[in-house]
Length: 280
Image 1 (cartoon, rainbow, N blue to C red):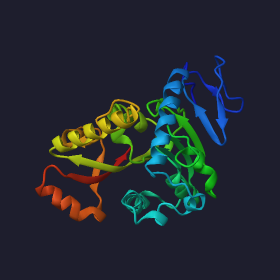
Image 2: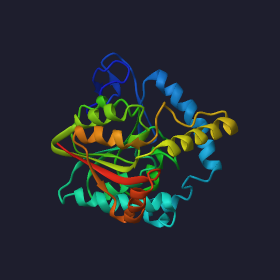
Image 3: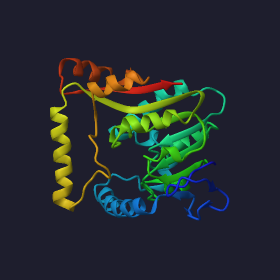
Image 4: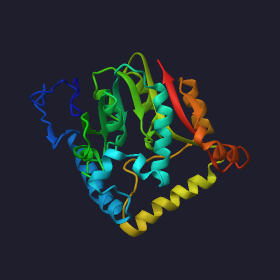
């Protein structure tokens, strides 16, 4: 694995885990921790509270023998049902030959495991580290891949090329999704692709803006906590869609959500549901 140091952007010796200027990195269980010191402090403080919230809200898969069966074992829940939809459309872009894949927003590893099961070489990156609700959940799966905790705005640390890059339902939460997306496209191999799942596009976003503000205020009131790690709009609107299309991202509607998309044609406050494909 060819990586640059997040502190000084010099090359890291992956065997010794030192950069050329002596900055040291380490593995936590089987996850490489690749964080700049100041960001690490901010992230660890954020995750400490977020983990408490997610466990209290029962939003965590906490039964170890369920992980290998994700997402199918929980598809009665809407959060996992839509991930089954993601797999159905993603499989169309997975050829028989093995691919080198970067998964951004890997969370608890459910998709990384699916891809590794198909014999692809997977590098999974995210902020979240918890053993049930983050990258360290890897230990509950039977397959293997590379996991890295890093700032997702630092994708330029990779000195690698990938055949497929997946944004796993996370691009809309980036503080600068266009910059993040374009950085990812620079990591593609010849004829590589970017797959973006879980894109909801609002024609009239007023209700969504109010919903997000209520959502944030709820956590400020109950937990004295900012629920988003970085400032973010948290959704895409029609103008965002047009801007992405201009840089080559093709939007396809989820066929499984035909009724919801049809309804959104007549109710402007409702989103249309897409996945995106970029071809180099």
